[in-house]
Length: 463
Image (cartoon, rainbow, N blue to C red; front, side, top):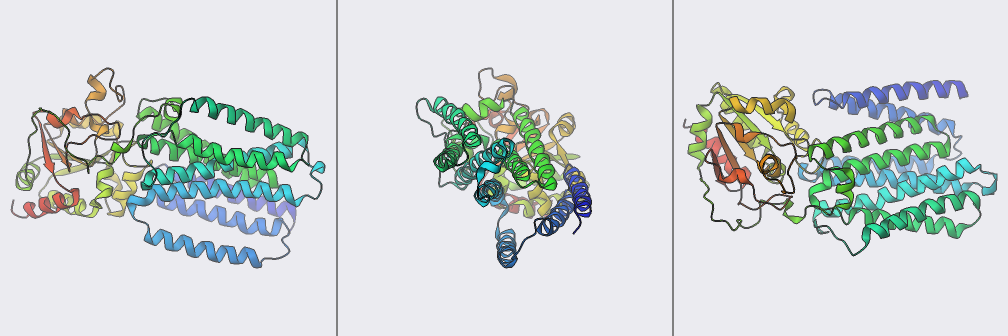
């Protein structure tokens, strides 16, 4: 195929990919945007196979068939609660694939000395970033899955040790560019990069996993862009750079939503296993809470003008999104206005709650982000807080010295009534008590979120 035609098709694929990513910015267009981006990448893959003058396609076809089968099976079987773990695995495989591309290109050349210094530096950086992404993502997967503790795992001087490893690995990249025939340097670089990925994520607490996932997604894009330079593929360079930039922007948004710097997230050893929160024992306190029942909640909601629902990870754990949709449908039939208020870091990854609610066919126009919904709480009769904790804690606004002080939250305490669906009074990811639980305008509806919503749905039939 003529080189000019190949580059033209690459340009078309790049345009499709950019439009696809642009459409991911809105829940209403995200699905079509994902399909467009996938189409652009598919075109790029097909053209690359012709562009690189592949001699044998047997292994490539076999890999496509096997990978597609595994992907289709995983997509069908994975539960919404496990979606963050799935994304972490995707990031890891993306970074690992980029490192393997650089490794393959490095070993393909019979005499590495024929490679320019720029090519060698690019290969080294691709291996470094891709390997860090690979092992870091699987540590994040383990923390999310629970077989690695969600508490920060640290040792004295760890940040200093990681800094030394980072500087050393960059030095090895330079050494590799200076002496590409020294395979010992190559393998040491590979090993240190893999170790650095592990040691970078282990000290980060479970509270910060949404930020970690977003950052690792950015790393995987940067690694892919580097791999594009390695094999001189413009589409991979551009698409990787787009993913890298988008991931960094989203990481910054996540940090701002928690009033934390990226440095504090990476090196602050914040948060821990309390992130699961709902399953633990009640907090030791002499403060008074006001319990409620399904019948009482049904009466309050049925006679309200406006109800706002603020979901959190507990909703995903209970797999209660479909029952919640049933409750909302019954309220709307009674003339109640219902909206959903979504905090940027609700759940275990960016957009987790939006995807969860979309699965239950919640209309996109009912989903409001924090900035949109906060002005409406003063005119809201009832707020149903289902599985959320730190993102609705008034201590973020009132208690100086609190770990979450200054963090933007959903201003649910300004509503006439808040009702918290929770198993117990246990703290959230930040490991602190929630002052909202003890407010006079708040009621606690204890129990599993799905069971509680089922009871509420049944009670609404009698109102």
